[in-house]
Amino acid sequence: MRNPFLSIRHFSTMSPVAACHVAVIGAGASGLAAARHLRREGHSVVVFEKESQVGGIWIYTNHTEPDPLGLDPTRPRVHSSLYSSLRTNLPRESMGFREYPFAAKKTGQRDPRRFPGHSEVLEYLKDYASEFGIGELVRFETEVSRVWRRGSGKWEVRSRKKNGDDEDINEAFDAVVVCNGHYTEPRIAHIPGVDRWPGKQIHSHNYRVPEPFQNKIVVLIGSSASAVDISREIASVANEVHIASWSNSTEESATLPGYDNVWLRPMIESANEDGTISFPHGLKISADIILHCTGYKYHFPFLDTEGIVTVDDNRVGPLYKHVFPPSLAPWLSFVGLPWKVAPFPQYELQCEWIAGILSGRISLPSEEEMTKEVEAFYDSLKASGVPKRYTHNMTGYQFEYNDWIAMQCGTPKTEEWRIKMYHATSLNRNARPESYREEWEDDDLVMQAYQDFAKQISCKQAS
Image 1 (cartoon, rainbow, N blue to C red):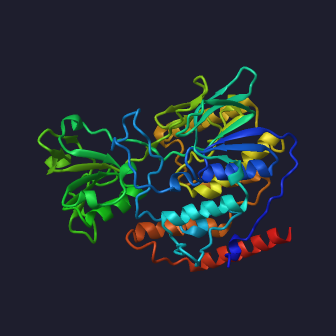
Image 2: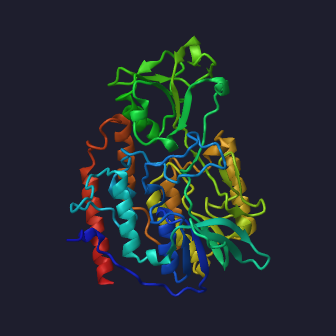
Image 3: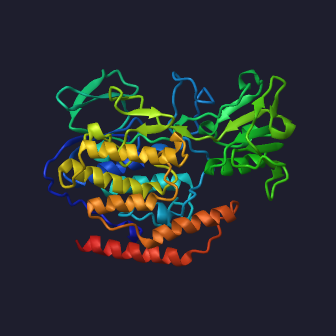
């Protein structure tokens, strides 16, 4: 029996003021949302996807890149950065699309846990694509090599079938929506002297399982979600794990609670030829491996805007509301750049906004007004001492941002339970980093979510 919370087939298409021919780059979660809302608005859509299935970053593979740090620009690239044991760090109720609840399926091989593993998220995205007929819009195993604007104002997309003998194909589109994700191109910590250090380095992009770290002394750099998970997993096989982070105190180092072989260290001062790693206060540790859990860079190797859109210290700009380059709006847009957010609901809103603007149903400010607002936003970050690389970090204001877009679209604001659940999970994760996926105290919010899901689906089935 199908889960009733997933039985919401709804293909109604709006009558746009103008219908556009739109290219969507990528069939991950953001690309699927873009295809769904663009077609719903009445546009014709082609989704370019280099893999053989939908899912993007959520497609797990054992394969890793030959360059473990991901520095070689000519290396064969692996898109996914998933490690085998990865589970979501948000509950399914709050992380799912607003119009397509991520409810548990207790049949077959599905993972019904509230914080499911990565394979369950992939199945959910496949369900979403199937529910809304998105697969028929996707050109699988097709890689985009260049996107540029012609003199006529149309956008040219050059693509080629992977592993085929076909030649490049150039096609014209009215608009391009970039949905290629930003968890593939590694960022590496700068460590003085590391070029002469004899040990091995790896970025978490190429981490899959802990076994290669058996009996090793590991220095892990980072303090984000992947660093928390991976450090604890490696600790089960490694001799020692030293977690180096700017957020750790520069005072005396301490062991991680519950572990006798994991230490919290301040950031590395240098790596040395004798195989040691130097920390503040004269501490040196002989280490075998440095594991960089240091995040990712935005990367658009296919996109040629003649310098209009740049990536400068991980700021993609200039972008109005993290989506539109003012001088190219609305014909070029980006979905899913913000981080420290619940991504799927935000993708949904961004895509609905883009689709409505392209059809003429929703208006954008003038190029001049958008440019002024972008400059004011950048100035405010600088005045607050926020580094440029944190431009797309939405800590503290994602729901305000989402609700602003919802207002532009005439869509309901974020559900109160979703906001409360996000914050409750954050507090619980900080208080119980080892067990928050199994223990929580917001069952009242879970009940509200499922009540909301039921009302929503009843309305759709009646429409």
